[in-house]
Image (cartoon, rainbow, N blue to C red; front, top):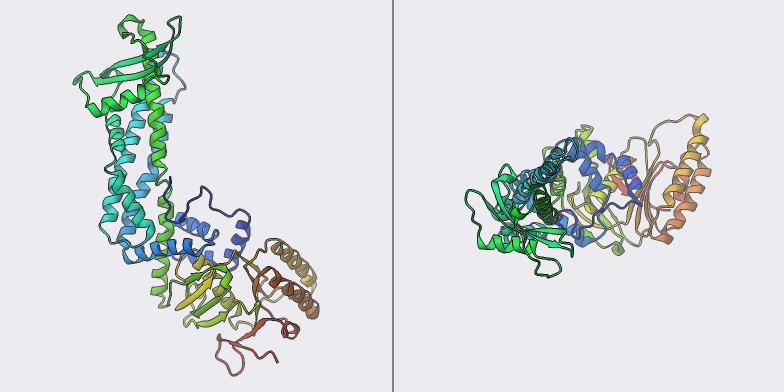
Length: 504
């Protein structure tokens, strides 16, 4: 079992390796990485934030799970800070344990029986410390969450689980066993070992039957019972006990070493399994920390935001009010103009035209960023939004609105054709394809015809597209298709405002 605050149904590697590279390109094209550098806490948080955006969720239920946790943390930021500190410490436990165990064998495996016994005991002592520390975190986590009125499924689940584990008798006994092996050396204890022998009276196995400190020589009943269960003969035989004093000292050390190594192995396995419950949560919490930083960043800029309603892919809709491009804040634009757009299943795509610097590319970035933020469980840069899940968000951004020389137009066109072919290989049903000034060559008619052939195929695989273009012929070529024609600004319309264009 493993808890996750990012994934409702955790899998070891949630990354979609098939579309990961394409998502990396999309995040770069949309300039999300440049905006995120402005609000993420540090480079580690920045990297984790972007990695999470590159694996957007595909289920409205999974997205709601993450959204609800984000809402809890927005309402209770101190809880997030407390949990971040707890899980940052928690995630260091295992590496500290491995470092301690590794340092025990710095000079290799000892050549003497006594040296080997001392190393085994030191490993057991380090593991006991790791076990006790791991178990103690259940109460720390429970106490932290219990102070707040959390609403989300994820945080309520962790709260309930930790509360139950704090009164778990098995965990209590693990702590007690861990407490027993805290003395500096093996000589501080008296041991009773149960051995199994063959017909020649050669010792074949050894298990710890009892242990007491030389000073106290006492053990609680509960601990005796647990250690007894660890050392119980696996075959159910009632093997005879062999008094330690009847054996050579070196042979006795070998038997004791085997018995202690068995306890060490059992403790390592059990504690490792328990540790996995919350491993990696400090990284997941850094994503929410970046989400809160995003909210602060937008508020300080005086811009609106909302938690979008995310619906299943089959609804095939994108409806946003007062959307804007977060990159404009980073660029220091004084007055950011917002726009609204509604694209439903009855439209296969959107064509957008407009003059240079009219805001077409910023609008396209705003649409793509809203889609990715929505599927990552984050607020979007809009006052209201209803967005359906997309199985992929792909982009092809030419050098938008930049001049290019006639001499290299053919090479650029060929490069874009190759890039488009690569993107088409990754098209799946319910893909959102964002095209910015693609197929822009000196032979405008040639570029428009080529693009028309591609765009007419996309609806057959339920791929919706938004195409920002200078190719005016596209609007004539696509006038009979189920495509929304729109323009940014222009005569008689406010600058940077998008509006429909009459297909006639």
